[in-house]
Length: 151
Picture 1 (spheres, rainbow, N blue to C red):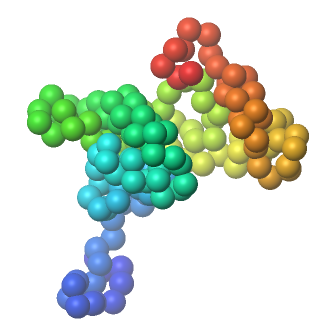
Picture 2 (cartoon, rainbow, N blue to C red):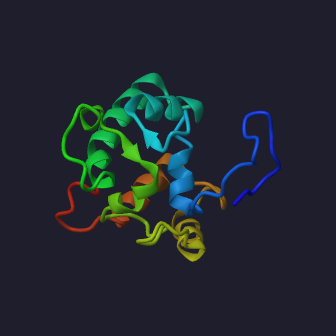
């Protein structure tokens, strides 16, 4: 089924893909080549694109991909591809962890009331943003006991 007009690259139009949930769209930002997989170097590039420093981007890309890769690739035994720690965008909901804000449900859908609750509860300096101290307070408040991976 075609979803758009033909173009030079797609003579029969683009094919409809499964609709992405909001969590998948969030992760797709880091999928720089749009192949459905986010490798550590793409996570690094995504962090740099949003203004994170070099060291933070480097450390974050390593820890995020190592922590989430296997959870998003069920049924894929270790292989050279998995040793590069790719995150599958379509399976990101499997990587949800404890000690989080609840802004995304277990299916990866956005929960607006939870998002608004963050600002109502923690934003003291600015009504539409969190300072680093306020962000730290939110993360601490959302911690579940003995959920060290989610902290």
